[in-house]
Image 1 (cartoon, rainbow, N blue to C red):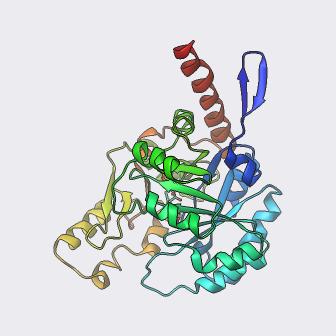
Image 2 (image 1 turned 135 degrees about the horizontal axis):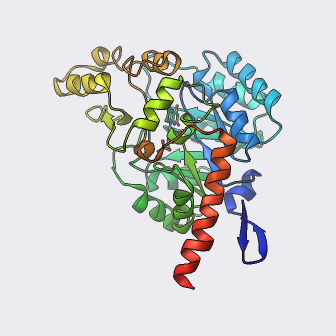
Length: 333
Ligand SMILES: Cc1cc2nc3c(=O)[nH]c(=O)nc-3n(C[C@H](O)[C@H](O)[C@H](O)COP(=O)(O)O)c2cc1C
């Protein structure tokens, strides 16, 4: 990130850009079905950090091939997202982890659970770990087991915001107060104003999911990208609250049905098929907004176009520069 302070041009460095060897303090977080090679490579080529989503690949062997595809498309750093969450079907986590490590990946984004059991293997292989979590206490626990950075996801975020309901405006500075390693602010970020705000709160970078879905390179049907552009910040909803596995989804007939079923006290076995990930996959592939539940964050209200990843990253960086230098600079001048 180049920042012009008067005549002088400086590269904006944060602990994040230094530690992970990327040009800009921007991460594209793991996204089930969306975090595939084309998007990850586009993010890497734009100078940000993309996270390939391990569990989007049906088997560990497919994941190893997908990592190879990213390498064919970029020689810049990238990460793999490794999400450890309760699933209806058991996941061979150890084997996915082995595929990541043996492919020589050097950055991993863990989420959903403390990565303690995997840390010895990751450290031995020289893999840097960004642990994404939704509370400061989980961030502190992850720091204790040796992760390198914490991505702290506020209540606004797409996917799993946890059960504390603490928005980023409070969560980010609380994390900065109590955690020593670099902090990536996540949830609700979609533009340069957000990046400048996160840096002002003490974070070392931002993580975005929903904003990257509405880019040219995201493997998401055009109709869904348009749905994102047309939606407002009021168009997301929280499912699985009653199961204490809250997820923020786009509001559609299926997310409403899931909430109704929760209210009727239906079991996870009954709700599971309605809220299944495979139905969500159909949304992205076929462009049918009502095919299943699909993740979206409140920042959907800040998304007004479908740029290329390069255009998006460049715009966020230059807008953040403008906010820091011109808008904020003029206030204190
Ligand atoms: C479609 C979609 C799928 C997601 N899937 C995952 C996932 O599998 N694992 C994970 O750790 N986070 C997942 N997330 C969360 C993102 O990585 C990121 O933390 C979140 O989107 C940040 O909030 P934002 O959408 O407001 O930018 C997903 C987000 C979206 C939009």
